[in-house]
Length: 214
Length: 236
Image 1 (cartoon, chains in turn cyan, orange):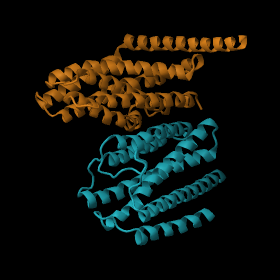
Image 2 (spheres, chains in turn purple, green):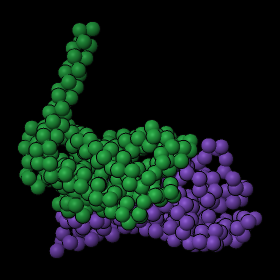
Image 3 (cartoon, each protein chain N blue to C red):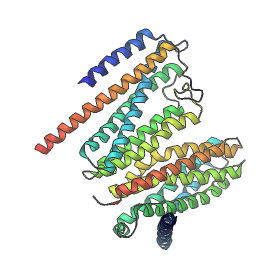
Image 4 (cartoon, chains in turn purple, green):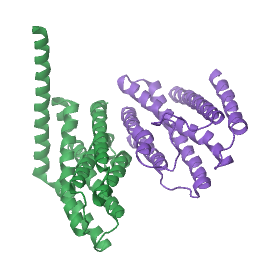
């Protein structure tokens, strides 16, 4: 409960900073405020996929029911955030560049991530009940592929996206208030990810207990 | 000193045993595939007929380098993934995987199939490339880079799709599931190989970096896959 309260408060603070405190960007205008939603959503997606990889590794080393629930829910959350990232990104692309989709390396990498993690559900439905080890193995494999899509490929090829937060020049090209709003938004979305993850795990555990009780 | 020498000798002996096992398994795979010739014949037929179909459909000179590179790698990757999946699925379908489990280590079995898969993929690509260049009358500005990108991209595709083949064979979904699992993993190879091929055909700089990326990606995928195969190797 404490986590949920802290998450709610941080989201409120992030919203105030993003929509009231930080100024609009000079060329993009008010649409630049999408950065405080789009970038944190992408961050949440990557965080979810990392969690799925970690719990998959734990399951493979020492199988436990809780780890199975954790890696599955983390993968579901990751896909959820990836879809939202793609949707907000497409909306922003339409405003900023005039097209919904132009195969920019970052846009393409998000699509690939969706394909990689959607395949997880194909595997899950194909294997039926005896699938936890296979699903965990695939999620760990996907977690190894993910950094190439998210961190490597967009840095190799020229992109319409602005410089990444982690870049060779080690600078974040945002003024102070915008930088603060962005980092607070990212932190609050991370807390949101953990809250949703915790909630999903509780629901899954209750479902399992009730089905075992029947 | 004697204890150190003893430890060193033990490690060398274990490595020599592993390499000897790997060699035996590779020879076994090659013998089985060349005896039946089913997979090799299918892969080469698919490759050649795809190039012919594309050539007839396009009708001759392919001047646009981007289109040439993309078409090459789409045909190449779909041809390349067939041998890799077949190596794992055949073992499950014929029921011989149990024998391998009793006798050999999982990493030796996986590496032998991966190496054989890579050999077949590279064979398909090396047959396909001259046909493609000839049928489409393509001028290759940097032949060395073109060959390097083909070898690196083909190897990386094999490494990226090997674990998907192993998982699909164990999970019972076979070819359809293999396609769903492997295509996303092979997509980075597609993008980078296309970029390297464009540079090779046009003579632009930077193509060797694309080949190096493919090799690194393949190495990472192979390393992760070897460890993960051990986890799905045994029956539940």
